[in-house]
Image 1 (cartoon, rainbow, N blue to C red):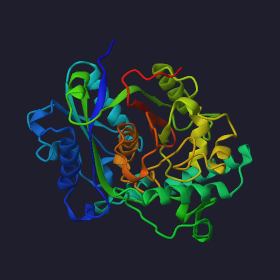
Image 2: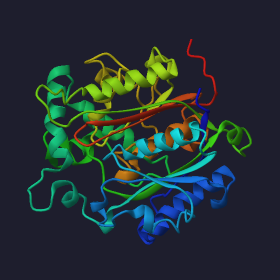
Image 3: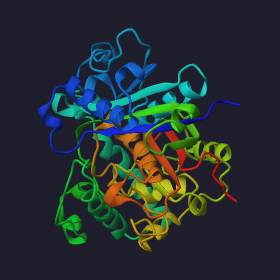
Length: 384
C-alpha cells in the first residue's frame, strides 16, 4: 500500500500586489506563504514540482531552470508538469504521487501564470491564425448542453453572481465586483453566444503553492492537515468521430476512478463541497453531471435550487472559483488547495460549515484533460 500523503501548507498570491513583482518574485511569494503555513523553510523540502500552462504564454522556456534560485531548488530534484488548463491539479497529483511513492517526505508544489508579461490569446491560437479563443471553442458545447438538458438561460447568470459574491469573501480572489447582480450579468456584452462578458473568467497574474508531506510529517505539523484520500487523471483525444464534447468520456472515467479509490458511492451526499474548474458559468452544471455528482440533465436543477451556494447542501466554488481568479497555470492548483482549505477549516469568511470531505477538480485543453482529488479532515473518512 502506498504511503499516505497530506497537504500541510498552503500559499497564494492575492489581488493587491501580483502586478508589482517579477515572475520569480510571484512564484517565491506563494512558496514562502506555503512554507510558513507548514512551519518549514526551503531547506526542509526534498523536491519541487512546478506546473504552468504553455511556456509560450510568457515566452520563458523551461522555467523550471530559471526559477530554481527563487524556489530554493538548486541541487534538488525539480519535476515539471504541463497538461493545459488542468495543469494545476495534475501538478498537485504529481506531488502527492511522489510522497506516496516513499521517495520524498516533503514536496513543494508551485504553479503560476504571469499573463501581463505575455499574450494568452496569441499563445493559445497560434498568432495570426484567427483563433477563436477558449470561449469560442466552448460556447457551442454549452449551447448543446442547454439544448440537451432543457436548462433555462438564467442558470448561467445565477452562477456568475454566486461565484463573484463568494469572491468578495476571499482575499486571494483577483476579480472583485461589488455590485454584481443578475441584471448586470444579463446586460453585459455578449462575447460568445450564450456567454456574456460577466459569465466568463478573467485573465490573471498569480501563483499558488502547497507543501505535501508524508503521514509522519503531517502529524508533526503545526496545523491540521488535509489528507489526500484519492486522486485520478484521465485524458482523451481532442477530436475524434462521435466525441461527446458536452460530457467527455475522460471526465466520466476520471470521476469513476476517483470515487472507486476513495470508496465514495454517492458523491452528492458523501462529499461536503467542491471546487470545480468553471471558467465559463455554464460549466458548473455540466461538470456536476459530467463527473457523476448528479444524473444527466439534473445539474442545472441543483444550481437553480440554490444548493450550490455557500449556504447550500452542496457548495460549489465557495472561494469564487475560476470566474474570479484565473492565472491559468495555477487555476487548477487553486481548486485543489481551496478544497484543502475547507477540510482544514482555514477558509475564513467562505468556510463551509462542517466541511470534512472536499473535491478539487480541473480540466484543460478542449475539455480533454481531467485531474481530480478528494481531501479529508480525517485519514480514514467514513463514507457509510
